[in-house]
Image 1 (cartoon, rainbow, N blue to C red):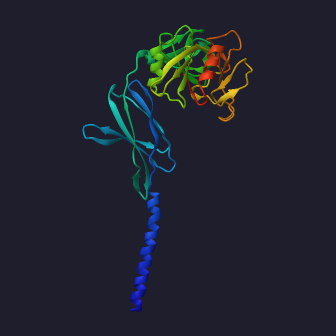
Image 2: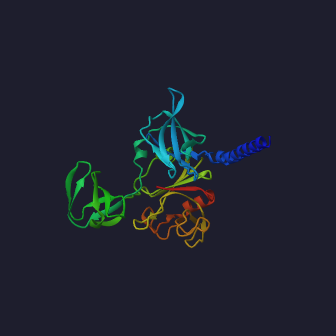
Length: 339
């Protein structure tokens, strides 16, 4: 009898130990749902989706809703370090539904999180909106050089002093564009940099200016948005919300010269500096400082008679009426798009 009781106790103890060990395994298998899954921007029949990366996952799986089966179908797998993806070849006017799940491997098995969903309608952009781009560098060839025309696949000889534009000032070889629009590759050492292909004589219509920021789905932490259009040397100020921005003002400006270009991308108003230029200094990039103590590019008053030129050391120079309009209306955290 004592022997049976001893065996029973051992069996009961083993069961309790197994149950205790099973608890943490269940906790470890939980996979967090991807955070902030969203459409970051839309292009011509394309869209860029983005999410915040998770540290405790092995990767992500993207699903597309199939209207014929009324089910989500896996379409692409991403690594744990991926946090954005551009969807292309979409059908304009069609509504797309995507779902993103995080997953991780636990003891050889893949465990998925709950899904995060986005929905959007694909759009086609007008030719004017598609043509908007950052300025290229203007250059001249230092000597006679032969290159391959990527458009015609034929050799082309460029005389010394030939003018063209290129997309970078770094690297051994850069992509260039001839005056006829054909693309080439050329050694950077063959080139003399002269400036940026900007022009104050051209400008976009009001509709194009609004379509650009709305179709790109730019957002702001305030109900104001600023787009510094580098190619046209204009500062465009909007009021509204994501996808519903309305142009309020458009002002001429000076931007950074080719060697000290204005910080590109999506920034935001971080703070204000001293009035050493005779007016407010509105800082929109950290530069060598921090977001709390920014020392980067800023909007400030013109320092001479120059306007509508690429001549600054990186800051955006404005006339006083434009500067004061931004200062009085656009608070801290207003997004600033440099493009």
